[in-house]
Each structure stands twice: as C-alpha cells, then as structure tokens.
Length: 221
Image 1 (cartoon, helix red, strand yellow):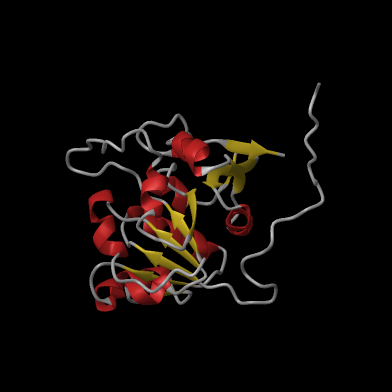
Image 2 (cartoon, one colour; image 1 turned 45 degrees about the vertical axis):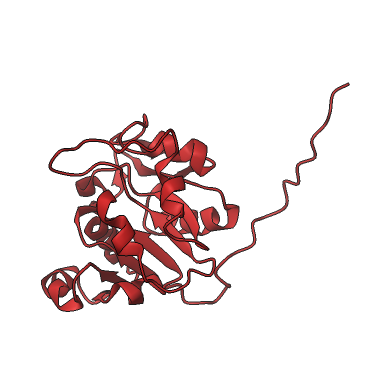
C-alpha cells in the first residue's frame, strides 16, 4: 500500500516580524564579514547598529566610513534588534554571546565559520553542523545560517553580476525565520537559495567542510 502524504501548498509561514513594524537589525562583530554585511545594508538604505567587543567609540572611524544609516553601539544594543547578525572568530563566540538579553524567539543570523587566523585549523565538532553548535550559545533564538560562504569582498560589492544576481545560501530549522531572512536577502539585491535544515543545509555551506563556500554563483533570470 502506498501512503500519500498531504502537503498544504497554500500554507505560508507565520511572519515573526509583524507587518508594518519597522524591522531593526543589529550586527555583532565588526571584522571583515560584519563590515561587509553592513555595506550591503548601506547600499540598500537599511539602518543597523554595529558592535564589537570594545566600546562604540572604537568604531567611530568605521561608522563615519559607512555613513548615517549604520550606527555604532554596544553588543547589548545590537542584540536587542529583531534580526541579529553574528560574525565573530569561532574561539571568541562564547564570550561574545555571554550576558546578552534573552533572545525571546528573535532571529539570529549565524555567519560564523569554524576556522580562523593564523593557524586556519578547523575545529572538531564531532560531526555536528557548526550552526547546531552555535545555537547552544543563543538559547531561545531562531538561528539561520547565512552570509558565511562568500568572501567578504564579494559580499560587500554589488550583487548584480553577469546579467544576474549573486547567490546567497541560507538554512534553518524554523521556516518563519527563514522567510524573514530570505526577504532581507532579496531587499539587499542577492538571490537567496534555501538549503533546508541546519543539519543538512548548514553543513553544505559551512567552511571548512562544505562544498558551497567560496563559490561565486550567479542566478540568471
């Protein structure tokens, strides 16, 4: 006997951010990837708060360079946003995520990779996807893996290329969170491709180990 699985194609994920609400974005990490993400937001006219492990005054020069839509703030200020983008050296993540406000179901974009200078030696995660490990540092958050697989210089530049749009992969265990990040990806001009869950899609896009990082792919049409 063949079992038929009912699929409700008309059902859409419930939005996490209410319609008409002014979405806020926070960035934790002002290194190459965090700054590149900020530049993509600037190009689209989207406001955000960017932070690092030091005081906001240490970001004055970067704030001036990025322009009026990006403000320097504390980690706590960035973490209160509707969508929080995290790009921090892997070994520094526990300290960067410590002591932050309760996540209360807010979206956290994991743009981290399990490798860092100067040794560039991958961390042994025991077969788990890096985002599954990262999720333990942000209990109560809805984690979406994205923005980690492109080099910073590509992420920062205009995604319109060769007659199409540069591709950004994303994955999550939460369909509504994925829908919000997919919408943001569209707003900043990239073509988003859903890779599924963190255990599956996260591994495909994680660096090192996955086949997708550093692939500069363009969606045409």
